[in-house]
Amino acid sequence: MFLNHSVRVHLYYGDADCICNRFGDQTVSIVVNYTHKEDLAAAGCQQFVVSGTEYGEIRQFGDFSFLEIYEAGHATLLSIRNHLEMLRRVLL
Image (cartoon, rainbow, N blue to C red; front, side):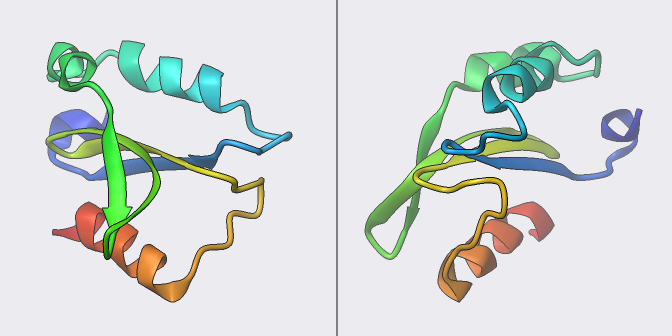
């Protein structure tokens, strides 16, 4: 598995997505078998805030993160600022 070899994995979903089930995918992100599985589950969700505005919730530990974006559908379109913050978290 990628996560056990220091490869960053970031899953993101819109809470209004009718195609990809964010609840199922979030559950998979918590139960997937990798080294820090328990740490990710214990991390809990935190607000995903950009420039003082809350855009969603993120669960993150080490190289693995799951982001739920509020009021976003399957073709999650965010402002450039939100995309850059999401990428910054994944890459740095």
